[in-house]
Length: 118
Image (tube, rainbow, N blue to C red; front, side, top):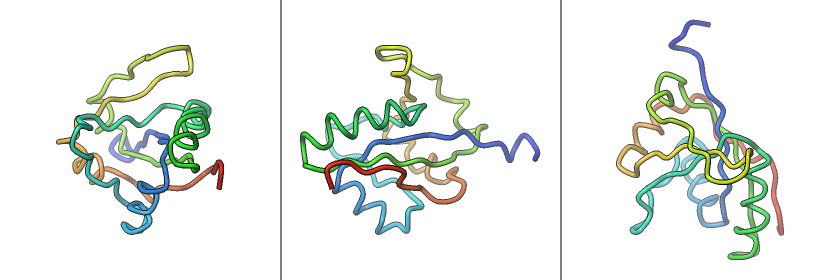
């Protein structure tokens, strides 16, 4: 594996609407952000994603899921990890205008790992 082939694993909690948009893309691309959502927030670990999916997505919609996907590390190196709470509460902040570039750097499929409230 060369440096250009290295990937970073990212996690993202999703609700039912975002999951359907992922399914429509063949689990290959994240949908554009909605108005009022200037940042795309993938997180660094499954535990944090599960916490959000179970506590927030289920509360808001009755359903939450944890997804996992890989992005070229050379692309993700443009975004420092942000600590937003406890030790596990770490995420990347990707501006909405750069989401298509992130999508172009996804390697493989976006996987659904866990579901809550289904």
